[in-house]
Length: 311
Image (cartoon, rainbow, N blue to C red; front, side, top):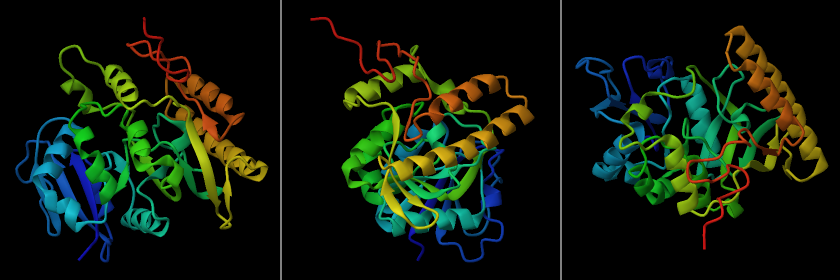
């Protein structure tokens, strides 16, 4: 029996069929949570399709609540978006790395061709793995123990904003069981955003949900940090060491060049903003601040912390 599971919330243009090409001996099962309207789409041997409308996180909460066997029968569960381009061997590698490094929470790195929000998620070619305080909602992979613990959180959000910060805290950052896996790289093929936001109601915005999540869980540090690295040569070191900083800076510089070239090639209207953001972070590659000037609706500054409350 396979001990790994991939659950994808899939629309009609989902890329998950390419994940299955050549996957004769894959180590994972695939469950397609389909929100389209075609009764015959994505029905094939060795793939389970379940129909469910709505936003990604409430739908996954409902599925995992109703199907408690999924959290019992599988050790690791990957919850990627449906616009992720990768191969079956990449998914096998992700699950192998999660098990090898005893991770509770992880994600593959993003190629420089990806549309991305957070610089920390870009592939570092000089490391195999970076232990972090952040895993993005785009491609999170969970050990079942942590997903069971975090399951109620999925039902309390529509956009998913803030979960990237809450999950690592629930995993226990001191244990170093949260990481971005550079040995595995995938590509996010569509601009950041997506169908979830149209399900927001009562004037609530993703920023409102982010502010609520951060304040509810007492998360003061909103800098995406790298705590340690495993180099391609197999050396493990804390990020505070000068050698680790050199590795991070070199890899981040290479990743930035690729990301900027891709942004200019597709004529991204925000490409100059991207350049400034990447250059700013190059000075401190173990502590990346992608959005230092954003203040959330409740007065929470993304970097400096919550606004002072009146007495």
